[in-house]
Image (cartoon, rainbow, N blue to C red; front, top):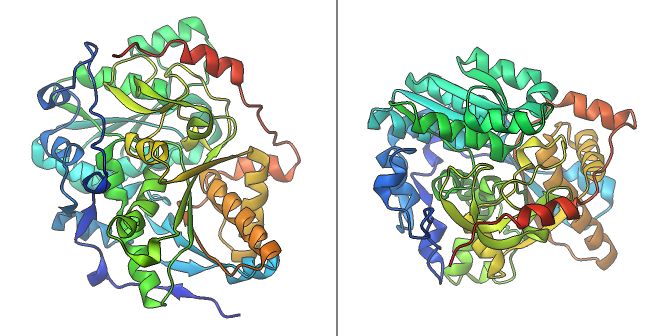
Length: 454
C-alpha cells in the first residue's frame, strides 16, 4: 500500500476564513457583563483592539485573510494531508485514515494560524505590547513568533505545571523574544490570591488568563491575545479544514468522520467547521458526516460539564460566556496535555454540541499515549500529547471498522509534534504515567460557584 501525501502550492492558500456563525440556525448567545446585560464593543476594547473585535462579532460567512498574513502563512502553509497507510496495516482496518499535519509550522503546532493574524491586527490598530497565557506552551511560543514577525513585544503567563514540565517550550518563547512567567505569579492580584490559598498551586489556563487580562486592563498600550475559545480564534483556525477540503477533493474522497482534540475548541473547530459548512449548504457528501471532539477524562468539559454562562477565566475578569463548563475555579489535574486543561469550551463548539450537530468523547491519559506511540512507530511522527487524544479516538473507530468491515474514511487533525514533550513520553515508556480519576466532587463544588444569570 503506497503512502498518500496530498500537497497544495502557495497559490492555493485560502484567501478567506470561514465563519460558522453565519450558518447557525440560532444566533450565538452574546457575552454578558456583571449586570447580566450583553457586553458592548466599547467595553471589550479595554482588552482587544477594534479589528479583532470586528471579527469576533462578525456574522459574515467569509472573512478576507490580509495579504500580510498570507505572506507569513506561506512559511509553512499549506500543510500536508497524509494517509496513515502504515497505521492502517498495523490495525488491520479496512478504514482509510488521513491526518492533517500542523506540526510543520515554525512553532510546531496549529497555533500560529491565529497568532499571526492576531499580531497583525494588533499592529495595524496601534497596540504597543501583547500579553497572553499559555498551557502546554504552543500558544505562547506561537504568539512570541508572531510578535517578532510584526515587531510587537510579548509577555506570556505560562501555567506553572507546564512551565516546569516543558522547559524547551519556554526557551522557544524566549528565543523569539517573549517574556515568560510561571503562573500564578506575585505580579497580579489574581496570582497573589491563588498563592495565598495554595503556595504550591500548579496553575491552570483559567488562572493564567486572569493574570494576563488583569495586567492588560491596568497597562495602557497593551492588549490581550487569546489562543483558543473565542470566535475570532476559531475563525483563523478554519484554514486547516479549508485546505483539507481542497486536498480531499484532489484525491476524490470525503471524510465520514473527523476527530480533533478539544480543550478550548480552536483545534477541533478549525478542522471540522469548514466541513460542517458543506452540511449547512446541503452537500450530499456531508449528509452522514460525524465530527467528534476529543477531551481528557480528567477535564471532561463537554461530556461532563453543564451548558451555562460562566467566566472564561478563574477570577472573573472576562465577560460571561454561554458554554459547557466545569466551573471557572475548577483546577484540573496536572495531565501532560496542558492545552486541554481548561474548565470551559468555545461558545461556538458548545452551541453546536448542545444542538447535537457534533459529538464528544473523553479518553484517559495512558490510553492517549499508547495511541501516540503506536502512531509514532507506524508513521514516524511523534505527536503532541494533545494530538494523541484525537489519534486515540480515531484508532478506536478504525478498530470498530475492523469488526464491522466498514471502509470508512477517517480524518484527524495532527495539531502538533511532541518534540518538547519527551518527558511525558519518558514517563509513559517507563510505566510511570497514570490516569487521573474524574474529579466529580471537585467539579460539583466548582459548579456551585457559577454566576447567577437570568
